[in-house]
Length: 207
Figure 1 (cartoon, one colour):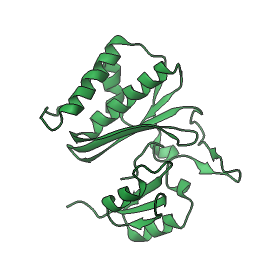
Figure 2 (cartoon, rainbow, N blue to C red):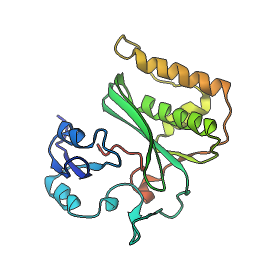
Figure 3 (cartoon, rainbow, N blue to C red):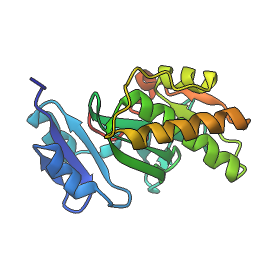
Figure 4 (cartoon, helix red, strand yellow):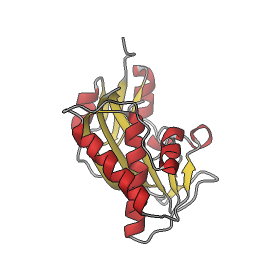
């Protein structure tokens, strides 16, 4: 049985502490600049809700000017990507945000019967394609070692079996692999240092 989680919404339709992901999602889905994260205890969630969200989300903290300060070692102007999957396999989605201000650049999904690793792989390739299209030679951060290896090999090495339900996921994989085989890129793909910087800025807040 999965451990109980509590969800804090600092910025959303109705900020507060919620006891289910569905309740939390209703507050943040489609909300520009939503800030939210899950916690393992109600006490911690309530404490977090009454505090500064940047103590709990990612590497950035607000200063008196309202701008965010990057943790030491984080490259300014970079792009961070991450994925989320409710189950394994389960509903999968991924997104990318600018590290400097957490502005969401893209969000894709959710798709049925995907995996987190697939989402991480697709997120990196999506970011690479976007950066090439817009001529941006920026660093791309991911916290998935597997996905970074798959991108390097230009192959999504998933063991997930294709079904009618997840066919759209496999179509995305085919497109991503094709893009990697037909294109080159200059963007460095870097490992997000969660231990020192906190959660990946693109994290969906469901841990």
